[in-house]
Image (cartoon, rainbow, N blue to C red; front, side):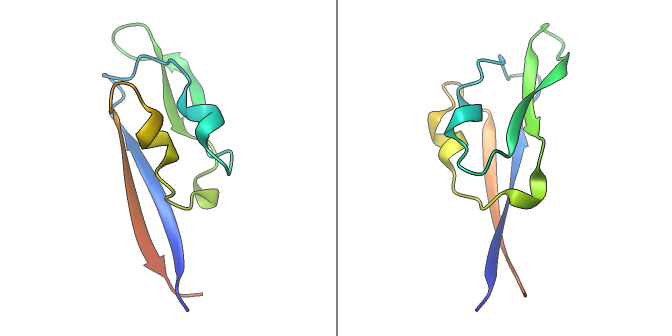
Length: 76
């Protein structure tokens, strides 16, 4: 049986750093950057990418819709 691996892509310039996605992630993949985007906001990024399952919780709760989730089957 193939394992599902996920990945997220965040539109860094559109992210307002609200942090709603951070607690929504069940595997603690997402964190807010210490750096800021062009508008001065910290942005979400994958702190622990190997733990992402592609559950889409982060994209669902994002008020600005700046997170895209990808899921890929990987052989074990």
